[in-house]
Image 1 (cartoon, rainbow over the protein chains, first blue to last red):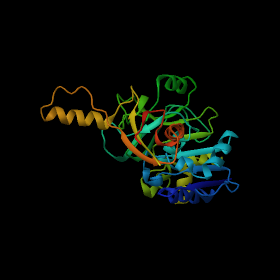
Image 2: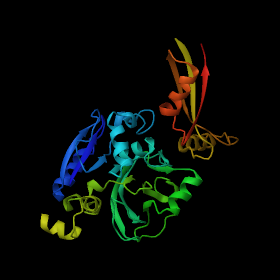
Image 3: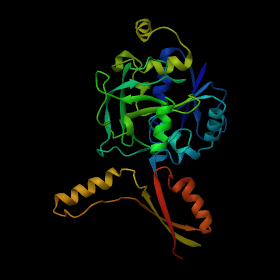
Image 4: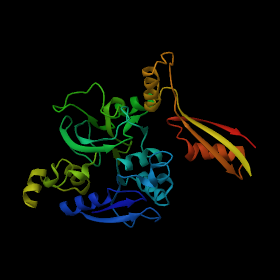
Length: 235
Length: 76
């Protein structure tokens, strides 16, 4: 199992993904946005950051990077693709995921840890529905929008994977960033492409304040054992 | 070389956080009659391109049809 993280000009979370892989014993390599193939990796991560300065719209220019043709073909073949934060924005711009991410309703960059409720599983997350995970968010454009038809389809096919929620897992009246239906993460119809605004790669090592992000990387790498056991082993 | 002006705005039904904040700001300084403020992008192109090509540029990159409408004006 080898994970590849694409580095766009302006990406800044790729080293966190590499660290997560190192910590969990998953083989990792970087992929350059100008490459045209995925170098034989088994799963691809589009990391957070500010690809191409976020100019025009977040992810709009990165979507046309040479490597994105390979990513689209890989995804169409059932290959596992994860977009974190800016990576999620790139995936919506590339139409690998529906909807779009616009400016937070409060016009503020939100940088804090938030509770997230698992709604359903996909190739990148295998947790019981209702479990609350805590992960940091750090974004200015995390306000998920889509039309009524898209939302109904996402709901009907259980493709909303994570929702912003209260500390006890209860519903919020409104997501901190204004996201429609409190959506924090969604997957495609094949459930192999997953995009989320929170940063699982930042909560891997307990010294960083949490380990709830491990579940994402464990699911894709097929690692067994619990997060707690892994943390104990690492310590 | 042709000149084009392109106006990109949020589609109806998409909440415009910056526009709403500006509207509230106007209200705060006494302009209570403003129902809605929409903030978009104004793009100028100097391009060796036909209007049809500019249409494709907008559909593919300059606007995101999921959330935005655009209007192209040929200005010379």
